[in-house]
Length: 359
Image (cartoon, rainbow, N blue to C red; front, side):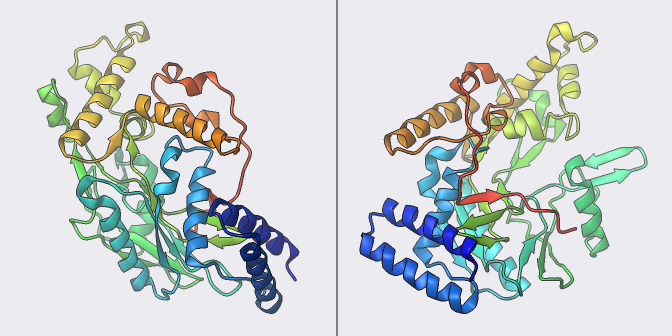
């Protein structure tokens, strides 16, 4: 018998059932059932409420996430019964529709069949919605972070559009079968055109970003069971878009152009042109999302929410783990309490884990 699996299952059942105010009798009975299942099949199957609470606990234990105050609001969609790539793709579309909710974003996770010796499912995309990156002779067009994946999509038969913000297709692979590619319908991704409340020229930059961050390449681990396909989402913190995706030099690198249009002195760093351009880009992102009625949080509010999360966890007798380098916002971090606190980067399960690229 797999004693490691049984131990992880026991640990999870005890913590999960205690949090849900189940009786000791219910805990003992469930552990007995699981022991029998592992004895006879080598594995066991979660109930719906175990997956639901396990996915929430995994969010609560995510050391890199500043938005954990809302961990218990995650909606779980159980799709473990699906067998084909087409069925999985249709479930992804339903998840996107539910979570997007016309802009009033709802945190959700869709859980597909777990990994076994005979089966594993992978969604190749890092996020369900991401923009293509094309390596051209004179440089990269689009998102440099997507160049390799874009090449793979083209190899699989995707028709490149050669634009700056082309939504990539969904790629699904079951076992070692050839991956299957699905083009998203035009209305599936909610996108926000980025404009500025004061600078009219900002619209001429023709920037946009998708409204919902759907992470789709991480595995969910609950009680020793690995779900290698379990896409989930929350909503964006403004700096993820304004201080990273659109600002990083190895991404869309918009700061020099914005600084130039602001007529800043870009010859010397002493002018703090990068900082000024960065602030205005982030103002534009927050303004555009708010104007369009799409959920987003600024980094100061997010830090206050994280502070509340820490207080709640302390009240419940749970130590707060965290990866400081990821928790501090990428803009003005010292203005948040997180910057001034140490966090233990201990890994607690259930949790979400990075997986090797399937391509």
